[in-house]
Length: 109
Image 1 (cartoon, rainbow, N blue to C red):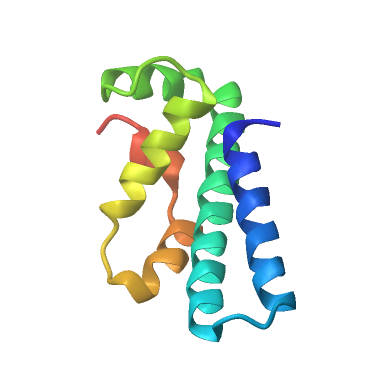
Image 2: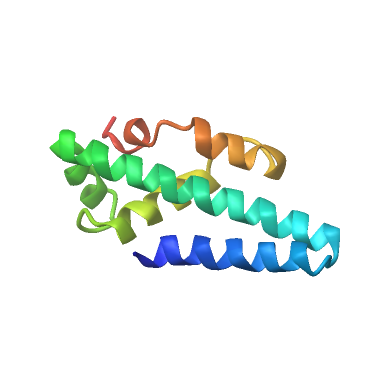
């Protein structure tokens, strides 16, 4: 289990405990949204990792963009930073993450 998966599982457990304790619904909703964003970022980083195994030029592009070697930490950093730069507002942030083509975003132009 990597640190990102652990972070997702820890937050999931926190949300579940808050639901069971019938804590503040607004806070639960906010943490649930954060959880969904973390899940999406992690899933998309894993997808990009697999894409890099099939397309070695993606690995080189990550290094050229200044993110370092091809590993989960650096790929996650690229996915996260690219997500922040996607057009839209905070309401569409999750859909932007889910809809982005991160392999295309990393390819040199």
